[in-house]
Amino acid sequence: MAVPIAKGAADPKVVILRAAGYLDVEAGRVVRPAVVEVRGERIVAVRSRMERPAAGARVVDLGSAILLPGLIDTHVHLTLGGPASRNALATLDAGFTTVQDLGSLDYVALALRDSIAAGLLAGPRVIASGPWLGIIGGICDFQGIGVRGPEAFTRRVREDVERGADLIKVCVTGWVEDGFNHPERVEPTDEELRAAVGEAHRLGRRVVAHAIGREGARRSVAAGVDAIVHSGFADDSTLETMRSRGIHLVPTLRSFEAQPRSPALDSLSSHMRRHLTRGILLAFGTDAGVIPHGRNAREFGALIRHGLSPAAALRSATLDAATFVGWSDRIGRLAPGLLADVIAVDGDPLADPTTLERVSFVMKGGHVHRGPAAKPR
Image (cartoon, rainbow, N blue to C red; front, side, top):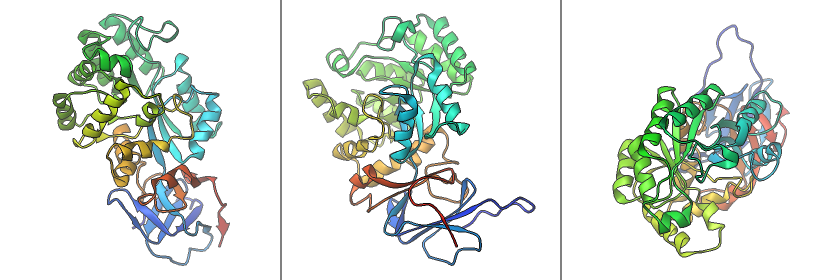
């Protein structure tokens, strides 16, 4: 299948990617061999047969590599864990061509998003929230940014959107130890939560909730959030509501595995092994910034250790993540008409998911960022 160029339009540069195969994320299988034709910033054809390239096309022969759509991390903090520009570059080098940044002070992630979009910095495509939204004295009251009362929550959402935030991140509970020892503890009131969610939705923005404790997850879902970020102790009723309403879970399991073991973390792992079998919509996320940027792909191993198949884990970082961020018509698959975000690994990622930690080629929006240069034919 191919996407035609409009008559009279200048014919943009054509690049042909050749490889041993490509991952069909919808079917969960590798198709062999692979030819992906890129024109400008978009994919125009995906084939499983080799053809003589058109005159003037430039060819990238990736030999025995397997092609995948660019990976998507829906929970990062590019301004944490070192200089933001370095973090962005490390993330793109690792094959993550789109990320969702869920909190920065002084709206810095929004400025970083815009600099990357303008071509001033190398990095992934960024979707960004404003600063964390939480109560005074709460877990996300960094440098005095906490607020109190429904009116203040509403004002902060409005201000974030006016400053250009793509979504809202609200902090509802503490961390794992608190969620384990005090499952009933919740920081904002129901009125504050509903005010934030209502205003965000009125302004056309999604809301994600940091909610690890059981009651915090329940109240967040009741308030109408679009996703719960981090693994947690949600009960069966809350999980069923999430499943029926299409509310996503962003597990960030690797960030918890990297911590010293404790009864709370052991209980969390047990909960998540049950959660991941319940048909909850998942979106891949790492909390990078808490773990090192550029090592995002280690989350795949954590997901698989908690019961996901390699195909399901990969889908969570491609098609399902694209659906979660509202960009399934742009990214998340290798298909005609979508942006040419293409990566390659040296091996079958379904048979050996660790190959995803060793990306050998990265194309973002039709531009080869990493790997062999295109050669004219």
